[in-house]
Length: 113
Image (tube, rainbow, N blue to C red; front, side, top):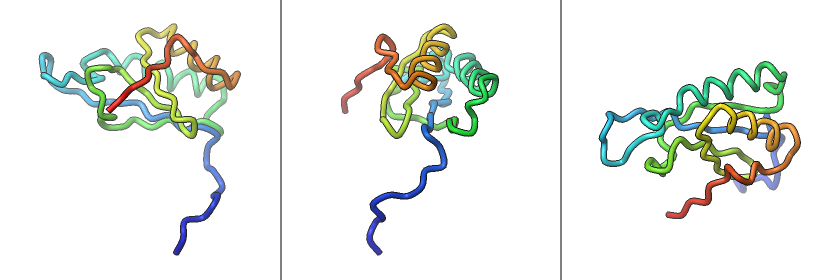
C-alpha cells in the first residue's frame, strides 16, 4: 500500500518536549537536569488556560537526541526547535508561535547532526 498524499490532522500543531532526566554530571546531560520540568508545566498550563488544547497537542517525550542543548521542544508540522530557558520564554513561544503563527525568533535553535 502506498503512503497517502494527505491525511486529516488531529492537531494544527503538536509539541514534543523532552522529559529525559539523567543524573547530574552525566556526560550527555539531559533536558530534565537543565530545568525542563517547570517550563513544561508552564507550557501545559498555558495551553489549557488559553483553550488551545483542541488545536495543540502536547506530548512529554523521551530524549530528542540533542541532550547538551536542552531543554528542548519541537513543534510540528513546522519542525521548529526551541530552547526556552525561562517561563517568560514559554509565554513568548505560546504567544508568537501558537497564537500568532509567527516564529519566536530569539528562541529558535538550529541543530545539526
